[in-house]
Image 1 (cartoon, one colour):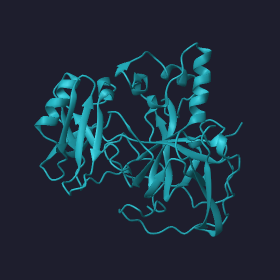
Image 2 (tube, helix red, strand yellow; image 1 turned 45 degrees about the vertical axis):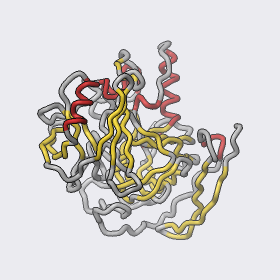
Image 3 (cartoon, one colour; image 1 turned 90 degrees about the vertical axis):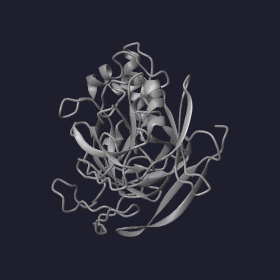
Length: 363
């Protein structure tokens, strides 16, 4: 590779015993590839249970799920010590269904990457719009700017052929009822200018709403959490090896490979040689954060949308995934969802340290 990598070892205290070495692998520029960085294996997890702080709703603290029915036991011996894996992409999606924003580093809050799915496009009745029915949402490129003059958060909307629109984000306006998968929430309408611009791009009357500060959603899964207007859990994780296996199967059908953005993950991981290793990582540390596995990511028709063109492109990848990735409920699963147990900072190049694995599946 043309760009050298740095590997900085930092001694960190384990919550259950002696210190261990955590590496952050980061290039000065260019892409990150875990296979070119390290072939070291993850350090074994201590067999002693770890103490967990009391539950709190504030970012930067660990959520406790010990008392909830169906939650995972305390971390114990890791039945599988996988190879080193690192974060190679971080993507936040400020507006649900619209284009993502790639980040070199990001703040992780209880609700996911900062601003992820904190805005949503609705119809005039408050029902959410999705690429399932409105694939042109993919063409809308949102950008958020906190500004340097204390003026508050500003959003810019842009789309090819539609120009751009900038406006101040309203966090205090009247609340209006919105519906997401038949669940009722509240949203703060972002005004007539944003509504008119979005209606022009999508070709149908639309409004833009933001999650209000008092939003207190509880998401489902093995370890419950919270999120903004995401489909479910706060963090969607997908490994490159999982996509590589899909490409092999697509090739057998003489179908072209698909880009990672078809699946709209928040965190892309490289270094796990076995596909779908993310399905078995139950408690994960990265940067200063801690995640808890909630459930597999069930896929829908959004994966058939070309994210650069805003149009549907046939049955793939759902047709091929249905051959080998059927979930227990009959849906197609690809990737994993996580709740945030402790917020903090994440960066491309951060190593993933798995404190708890699910048992291997029987042969």
